[in-house]
Image 1 (cartoon, helix red, strand yellow):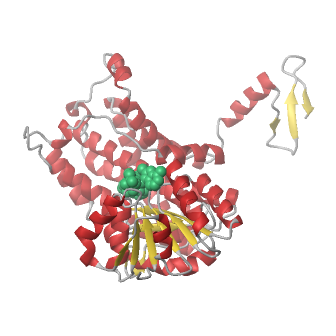
Image 2 (image 1 turned 90 degrees about the horizontal axis):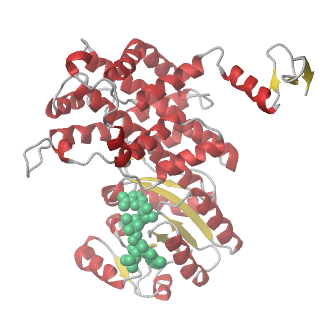
Length: 476
Ligand code: NBP
């Protein structure tokens, strides 16, 4: 049997396309799927794209691979991934490698890596972004695992990844779960980005008073400037699309309930554990959640408040102001996401190069954007940047956006248009800038009802006030 450089098991849409991508780049690919029909189908349909070695049993699959073996697992995340690992691990030899390209939770990846390491096997949990199209034509790839694993696997992955300016959108992220962690935060940022675009559309429609096709034109114009990105580009296409059945703008016939698969929720759960304020991502997750509570929405539909009406809300220059608010809020969302990556790295002992993450997100993935070059430049200028907000370029953009950002948030509030992404981004910005926060009062309340103590501005130590007694202060 011909020996393959890499094998893919799990040949649903993602696995099939990754396998074809490897083959198209000249790598012989061993194929395996629980249901053998999928394997046969792939070879029948795409067998001429490269060298495929179809196999039907786990033993045949393992035997078809060059040593050290590289098995890519592209099955449903969770229990199926564990089942597949357990099916193959006993058949492998020391130094062989299992690569999980599914959307695993990074804590599962840490567990699996530790387990396989004990069995002298290498395990690479890798984020793969870009959906089925990316998997076929060049995804953004975020592999975790050991440096040893990356040394032999990296060149293959870099070969099939998207490239921007000749640089592959793939790099070694860090040990064990680092790749899946970064992929998770990437998805969280994607949620925030989409929410901010949705709010921009809502404001352009109901505060500025534009029709969907006109808003498509606005987005198209924005896509020629600093907001240039895949998500802005597809937004223009969607808004320009008419429903063939009714002739209505397509956006008006889609039920206004946004679903989610879970990586946004994971990002927020992890951020809560790490104590990192990712309010923009959380607001985006909650906005989807609110949209799905149809009973609650129906019950509240008659509550008083302004009804969005562009005749009242529109102000000269509002559309331009929305562009500025969008850019400023986007900077905040990414700053929060990068803060989470830094905090995750500190917590789990990973060395993650923030600038390299921006670099590999420039192509292949859903959040690909011109903006990421700016982030890359920011970390190149200062690898220890405390927050993206203080980078010279971004600080300048945030400064320029001030009046616009505030007027958009105010216009949304006055018009009764929910803009949680814009307003929470502004609140985060203002909170970081504030010399003093009302957290002093919060902490005093905690001391009052729970004797949780407080620190003072004028001397070191922890203190407690005897609130129920003579209100004198004691050292805690
Ligand atoms: P699915 O997530 O739909 O999984 C289907 C594959 O899993 C099939 O090959 C199926 O085999 C296999 N499988 C299952 Br289900 N249970 C199994 C078990 N117990 N043992 C062996 N195989 C099992 O496929 P997908 O949409 O191609 O996604 C693959 C992975 O990539 C997922 O983790 C997904 O989250 C991730 N991902 C997807 C996208 C995307 O855009 N779809 C993007 C990025 C990452 P069968 O053919 O025998 O049923």
